Length: 500
Image (tube, rainbow, N blue to C red; front, side, top):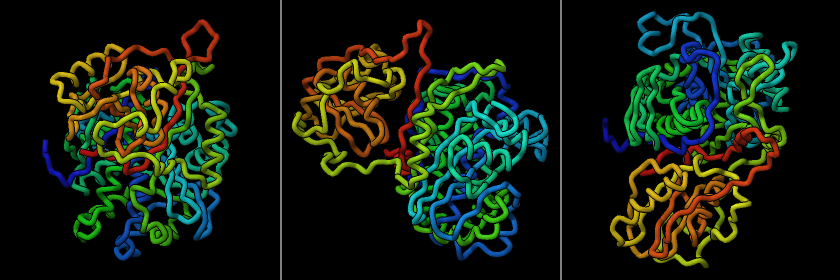
């Protein structure tokens, strides 16, 4: 694999202890695994600085339009865009279907949905993934998985279903097909991904060990669509959001937008994959101009909170149920134009490891993270171990003890630049405090510190005494195994990109 330093690195936590049982065959869904990435990229890349001059009447004419029953919007002001990834393979050759493991079914299905919210000043973008197996009411059809809305009534029914489920007004609609993702990745020269866990997809033969890899469009499609990790669909959503972030970063870089040849290939590939509502097709250039200053720091990602990821529907289907209260709060905040990502607090120390940090320097310590207050189990937490001492082998020993305590530690331990840490320090990105608290509770004397990092880290100091198992508080009184509650942590596109 290439070590091109200019490549964009994709990463993040892709772990969990739950798995969604699926009845529908993988072949029937394969093509739409990553088409949402293309749609989100299409919707945001066109907003990049320097693109507007290129978009001509010809380019705009490449976009198909559909009557989606959307509300439309004023030139300015907050708006919500429903992004639908459509699994369409009718126009693919048999060779293409075999190469991409898409199967040979005809027709179109919606396998991925995202709501894209543009803030009132169009300076911020929030992207919320709607799990395809969400069990919701489809107007006039009864209760079904949310992805059934498109096959039952096309774009108009998909829009009505999402409006009813979220309480948001959908102003515009964007639909993208299967080949768009491959074309966009290839137009950008590929994408470099880093996976913290091994991937072994028996269906497609796609395999990756933990590490960094440069992938072309077809292989990136396998990476973004695979379910071959612990949380299946939920991990796939994480990877899709991470890949969108990386592609957006790559597309907005000067190397792409300042190069007419690259820009021509990118925009040409992107526009041809899109179907949008009629009103948006007439004013896409205006929207692009308003969004031209948006950066990866201004794009936030989240997933609808779930209460039950192993729901058995009355039809016998495996589905997921939203956490109604948490979902209602999430969409209320979006409707009120409230940012989901909290700014890093000014009193937090720098992410650069400091020398011999003391308890007074930390944002908090494990003393406030008792077992009774913990909500995220160790098996859903990926930890990067960093030896902050000169004690040989301490990092390896710490990794072994964390694994024994139930944590995921996929990568080999690293070392800090300075070797004079005393107390162990748990560092975490914004929105991951609950996971950090679980780790801090397992490491006596550990300090909690929010920092500009991509995942949960443990810096081991000389006072490290080992890792212990922790007990996660549950509220269920049933004798049956409780369903895991999945509460999303919003992250910016910048946070989603791997940092070396």
